[in-house]
Image 1 (tube, rainbow, N blue to C red):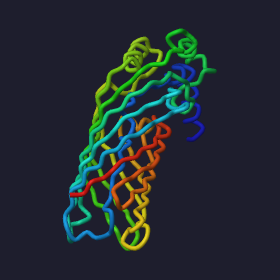
Image 2 (cartoon, one colour; image 1 turned 90 degrees about the vertical axis):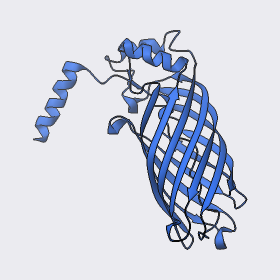
Image 3 (spheres, rainbow, N blue to C red; image 1 turned 135 degrees about the vertical axis):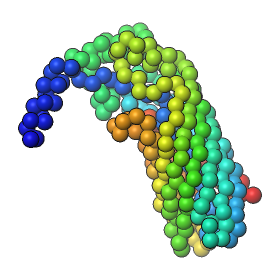
Image 4 (cartoon, rainbow, N blue to C red; image 1 turned 135 degrees about the horizontal axis):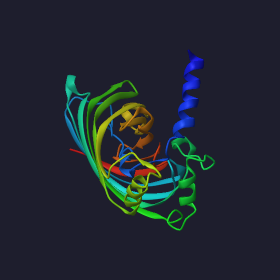
Length: 265
């Protein structure tokens, strides 16, 4: 049976060619804004917090883009219950970012300059249009609901919700043109919405978190087929004063550095 499937795949490729190179909206990246947690394990009372942060993102070569540099900011509000229900929370966040990038060829994203099927894209990359740097901008919104537990020094939990994005730029205009010319497969429209999930694991540092907390968070954006989902891993350190900072690694923006301040009411 396995041999028949391999033969079928070979025949299919010979008849239809390889998959087209893919392109995505930068809005499909996970929001750089991390989830913030209680400053210390004391959860007797309900809590409302406001977190504002700025970030810088860079991609050397990933998902058929290269030399990407971006900057922006995010604001998030979190409501946490107290007492027995203290793990339950709701978070709403919004932000915007923009920058510049060039089209590239990433073999992990259906692109291979050496394949005859992708020769049109390879030729375009060598053209005046293909060698240009393009601007982009996106606005994002996210709503999450979940549970954030702490036992002793440990912090862990999960949340789910939706993320929306809106964008428009030279980069998006060119994605559409290349899609119309059947040179690339543009997965996302300029506007979109999809389900997101977050899971995290971390620790309070010192007694009652007197030195802050350190948390690793993984986010997934479920847009398109399973091969087209985007993800990111964030590492965040938060000080008891409310200042926080960290780094994230993701599909569209490879490396993101962020810092901000949380205010608790």
